[in-house]
Image (cartoon, rainbow, N blue to C red; front, side, top):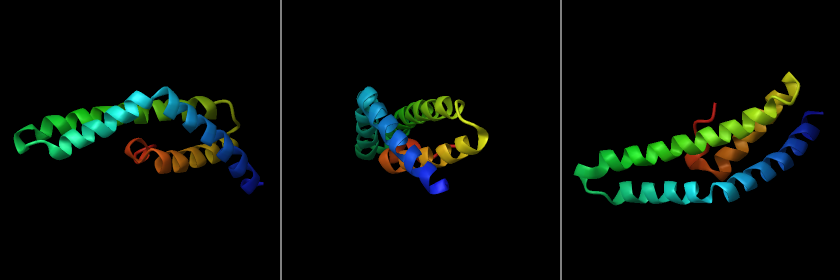
Length: 103
């Protein structure tokens, strides 16, 4: 039963993450650009550049958590737990900048 749920949730999560990528393409690009700016910034600008990067990461993570939590509310407790595990795992793989801290 768990394998079937994971497979079912896997397809759903893949679709949700594809929509996130499409709807938030600018955020994804801006986050990568902010990381590049931080990595290439002189030391006197590094702290500010890192702050810009972290703000964008927080925004992306918040958006992913909203998608996850909104859907999880429609499921019973056991199914919601399975779904969250699948979502977190796939989000971390697809969007490592945003998903590494998903709760």
